[in-house]
Image (cartoon, rainbow, N blue to C red; front, side, top):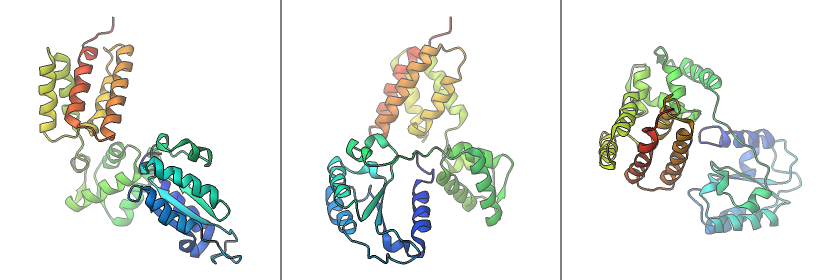
Amino acid sequence: GPPGTGKTTVALALMKQFFGTEWRNRVKEMNASDERGIGAVREKVKTFAQLAVGRGGAGGGSKANFRVIILDEADSMTHDAQAALRRIMEEFVQVTRFIIICNYVSKIIGPLHSRCSKFRFQPVGGDFQKKRLLHICEQERVKVGPNAIDKLIHLSDGDMRCAVNMLQTAVTFYDEVSADALVEVACAVPEREIASLLQRTKESKSVDDVAAAVRAFLLDGYSGQQALPRVLEAIAGEPSLPDLAKAKCAGLFSLTEERLTSGCDEELQLLHLFSQLRPLLQQRVR
């Protein structure tokens, strides 16, 4: 599931409930993005996995005779490391269980898929976020302006961790947390800038005009990757644009998002995206 939806929190809560007070003796948590190579799997994971649990367990009220390894951000592991992990899971299945946490399940190799039960986490719902954020504000005595919580939910886009971090940052700089303060803290792209970029792309007569608009947008300090979903949302809501053109636009955004996530150059990818969008945006419903 996506970041900030409670995957690691649920895993740790489950371990505490299952193993009781001695859960730390039975659980090893690893961030696979830091230790993602085959060496870490062989040295740390295998060493912990092969430790047997005594008949009396490790206390805490649990009778389970196995340990648990939590691998966070496992989609960052190399394919060789994942292949080594598969062999370890087979070899020590009697004494060790694995919880594999990832954002992109497509980056986990097939043999690991077949050995696991999958639990998909959706973005945190707005109602739950609002209830929890209001509780935090009440406990921490945070002054919140009108519509600030709704703006925070919109900016976090279902990421609870992001919402709490933005709220904490806003409290550091402002006596009262307002919607404008949250927009500034989040470094969100203003609606007028999104509209301006789209309008300049529509009115451009050549790729050079598109390049000038994109470069001006980036020189103002806005994040291209952060702007992508907002631009796509604006295009999807444009009544004068044909549905087929909107579908083609969505495909272009998907490709650009994948490339940016993989670490490609932001300016180059945005130039390519808006150059491809120009003829599509200039179409009209007949």
